Length: 410
Ligand SMILES: [Zn+2]
Image 1 (cartoon, rainbow, N blue to C red):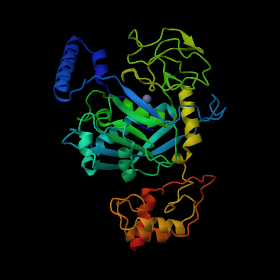
Image 2: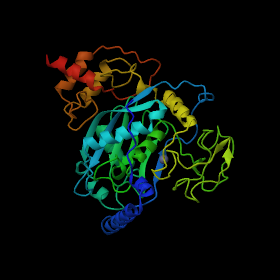
Image 3: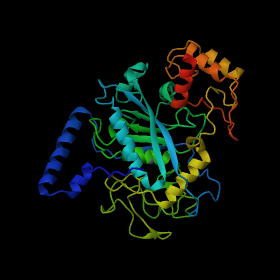
Image 4: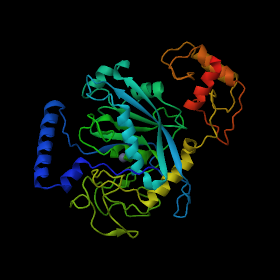
């Protein structure tokens, strides 16, 4: 994998600079604060918050995480969905270059893990497509992640099969000061599964960035998606003071032994008050530099070996189809690994539907005779689905679809 130097961020500039640059940086902060207080109505330097969705328990069978395990290379295909409305949320219509830059940095952050992310497709949806757009545009109206029904209207329109693709949703102005959220537990029936990042912190360049410049929210949420909890997790809550949650590291906290149960940290290790004293826990010193903490980006740069092992174990346990081609079954809507009558009836039930993803095989969001022809071209297919027998939406792989479309046109 290509290794790129981590871009120098705003905070690093402040730390590394001379007196003149420091004054310049302070000037920028003052101007930024002034602009934001006068135009956005909310502080620019809000504390990070993140919501972890799904079961907070440890779903891994005993013995799946150990230091001898082999973490085979995993590449996860991702689709990025952008919700935008430049008129109300300036610069929310982020470019493909911004998305590619975000994935470049994500892969740098995961470089030591043997897990990488492949951007395969993007979708753009205008907020005005939804009846609740006006409410979303108003402070205190519809916002994510509090409004599941509205979220599902968007995800059902654009998402790719959650078993085989990581769906990344980028939208402006989440509820409160939440910057991102993700499902740490995979539910095949969940229409909202995936990673959600606020537009204002997505990417490493671009005018959409308002205060967080190093794409760390995407890295952090992807950590959740791969099965990690916050390092300050304590049951369903957080460790708010040092000395809390000192127990069996395999069964409490974040279920990882080389991440001490540090309290939630919004500063770096050199900043007193934000981290626990220099004592050790299972031989590891307390720190505040982990990707799964809330510390600022200039010091958020580590996944521990235990976290890397857990990500591999969790991905293999609950998201194995992400990096396996064995279960791909084009046209198999009902997930029985056979393309047959029920799949045909399913497609016909959406026939002539406009703006539909169900029954839409050629991804034009309309169910037409072309989709019917595509299904008939694979009718009778038996697929090797291994032991998996979960209902799922049709897998959609661009190269296979292109080939099939070509075939139906001949
Ligand atoms: Zn989080």
